[in-house]
Length: 344
Image 1 (spheres, rainbow, N blue to C red):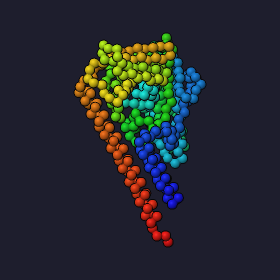
Image 2 (image 1 turned 45 degrees about the horizontal axis):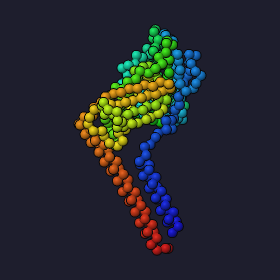
Image 3 (image 1 turned 45 degrees about the vertical axis):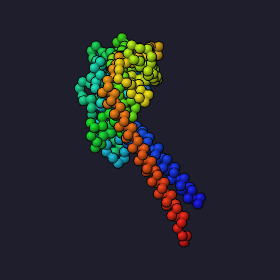
Image 4 (image 1 turned 180 degrees about the horizontal axis):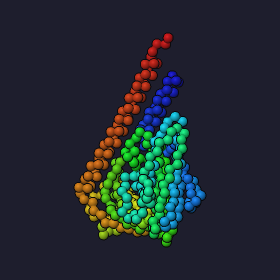
């Protein structure tokens, strides 16, 4: 009987782990199982003696090398790698993203990393036999009049093997690694971002509604430790219908941040509103406002999506519960039959 109780406890524990595991989003380790490694090859022009990223002062007409060594760590498998230069962007979570995305080039950017490669492709492919090592180098040519502010990006390496590399753009998994690149102007520095709210629209994802607030940094300046304080009012009024505060955000030069202001589980009624936003970084405060309108058809569309998302989640939970119950009933039945079976 004691063994039966232990077995039942084990089954119930496994059911709990099963339910938790099915409802938790997996997070892939960036390098686990990748079977390769990369390391930067620094030149004399490197600003800082660091093993983390390339850092250059971009003197006019200078030629700056970005060299990386790729090593296939597998003892048995040949691997194919795609190497590309990437322009840094800002993620919806408020972090600087050095990986490829589907975002288009920002119209406010005068210079991005790929502009500085003159004599070779910005995307390269190599194949390495087991244990082999190869160096890949990009040469950046700084224009005669230099660059403005900061150019930010990375050398991004993806192990593609037999995959369709184009289909994997924007997907960062255990088969990708990168080295950030920071180029700073040798001219008068651009120190402050140029910020504005381009658009506010009602939207939803994952069963939650929010106001998608598109913040544009139009200056070649990266900045961080940003505190955002948002408030929504009826247009022309001062009563705050929604408020939200977030901290430790970052923005890349010449990039877009799609900031999500939650509507606290409901959608706003059709009408005219104003988004009030304050962004603080260091001793600098940036205050912005943007009028926006929620139309009846827009609200209906978002609510329909919310209902579909909630139904999907409800069905998923229902099947999880049914599966767990079936497993428990089967286990209890087996234990009962085992208990009643005649002993040999």
